[in-house]
Image (tube, rainbow, N blue to C red; front, top):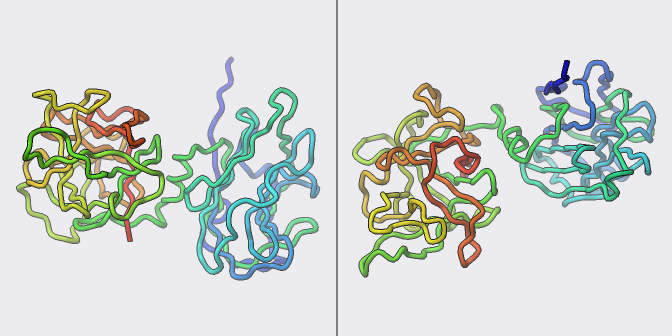
Length: 372
């Protein structure tokens, strides 16, 4: 009989707990999800004080040298030091990565490791900050262990001074998208309401829905600007949109946005509306020749979009739109073609945006982010 890998995860710490430098929580190997050749750990951490020496966040192994997985903080500035044990060295990984953690601020941290992919990845607050790649892929491998998992003080190392919560142990390597979804978990999510300032991130390429003020060449009095994806860091001038009601329907500012309903988006900087239209008169995108997505200054029915969570393309999608939701947007007036982007680049290195497909492709996936 063939064997199938079963994805399992466990939340070892849920609500925040305070930790001193000699405090620890220990979880036996048998009580953790069964790991073969990959794993991930996510957690929320708030450091109250930098230690004058190294500090342990977590460490798995019966001995100090058995360190798959492990994560330390550097002395004085609490920068992350992720490690694992390999068959060629006991402490493989980073001596320091990223800036030191800010004191008295909650951070989301994700550690992902895979012997199959030969890599270790680190994320802070949902953003990928670096990776270590095993160079000799045929001979070098990660050594996993059956020792206990220590959170806080471990072996000869003191722990951290602060608080920890939502410590989750997975027996697979989380994708960047899954890390982001873990970052936007239910405890952090906030509702999107009418009037909310939001950004839309294309999940596959992590670029923001935006504009650069380039016009589509319709006519001398053209009022349509090209919508693109541009940059993996938010541009507060060009990437921010206001959620509004559908054209012709009244909705009060502050009202919750129900899923499987029709809404609109107004671009904050230009005051124009997210718009699409049919492909008549060769009104298509410059490279892929697909249905255009534009900004239009005049409100009309072509500004209406049906909103659903990704993979909920039936009429049974219920609930309210929340910060961090992975969604699809369907253009009502063109047979519900879905908002789409891909790695096709325009001449200025921005990413082409169109309407294409039924919402089932990865390129139809968008993450909605609330802008404070």
